[in-house]
Length: 388
Image (tube, rainbow, N blue to C red; front, side, top):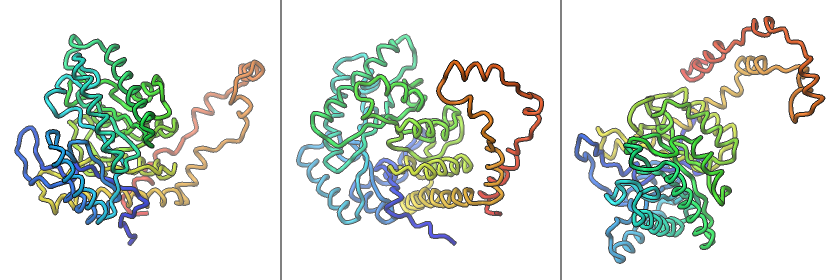
C-alpha cells in the first residue's frame, strides 16, 4: 500500500476557522469548545499539515486591546515555531460584524466602505507580519436580497475602487503579496456580486493592477450553482490566475456544506486533482471545510487527515490513469490527428479562409464514428473503484 502521509511539498493548508469550527449552525448551539489559535496550530502540526491561514479576527478578536493582541501573537508565533507550520494566506472578515449587514466595499453607507478599507489594510499588515504571500477576498455580504436596494453598476464600481486602492496600498508598502478573489453565488446574501469564478476573471481584467490579482475558486461555491468546478479551475489555470484554491465538497444545489474533500463527488474530485497535478500547480492546497457537527476534536483530526489522505490517494489514481495502457490507447485514438486540417487553423489569413471555404467534408462519415467515451469513462470509474 502506498504511503499517504502528507509532506511539506504537498502544501496542504487549513484555516483557523476550519479546524476551529465549533459546530454551531442556524439550528443548534456549539458542540465543541473554542480553542486558541496556538492550540489549533498544534492540532494541525499533529495531523501533518503544511500551513495555517486566518481571517484577522480568527487570530485577534475584533475588540482585543493592544496588550491582548500582542499576547495572542506571541503564543501563535511560538506555536508556529514549535510545529514548523507556516502562514501562506490571510484574509479579512468583512461579513460577521453587524456593521457589514449590507456589505463592506459595496455598502450604500460611505462610512462602512471606509471602515472596510481601514480594517482590510490593518489585516493585510497582520497577514504580512506572519509571512502571508496571498491575500484572499470573499465578499460574503457584497450583494442584495432585493435589487431595489442597490444599483448593480455602482456596486461593481465600488468593488473596483476598493481593489485598486488596496493594490496601491500593497505597492506603497512594498509588500510581496498578491490578491485572490473568491466567488460565491449566494448565502448569506440572497445574491452575491461576481458570483462565479468566470465573473471574477472578467472583473480582474478591469482593474488598474490586474497582474496582482487572481482567483481563489472553491469547490462548494461553484457546486452550489450547479457548475462544473473543474472547468472553472481550468479557465483560471489557463489564464495564469489560479493564485489559491479552496478544496472541500458539496452536494449540488445545497447550502454551503463545506464537507471533507472528496466526501460527496469523488469523480469530480479526481478530475480536479488530476488537473492540478498534471499542470504542476504549486500554490497552497487549502481545505476550506470543517468536520461534521457530530465530532469532538479527535473527529476534527480525523476530518483533517481525511482531506489530505483523499487528495493523495486521488493524486496516485491520476498517475495510474496517465500510465494505464488501455486508457492511454483510447485517449490517443480519441485525439488522433493526421494533420490534414492543420492548414486551416491558427492565425487568420484571406488565403486560408478561401481554401477552407472550398474544402469538402463528408458529414455522414464524420458523424458516424463512435467516439468510445463510454468505455473511457467506465475505465476511469474502475480506476477509482480500485479494480484496475
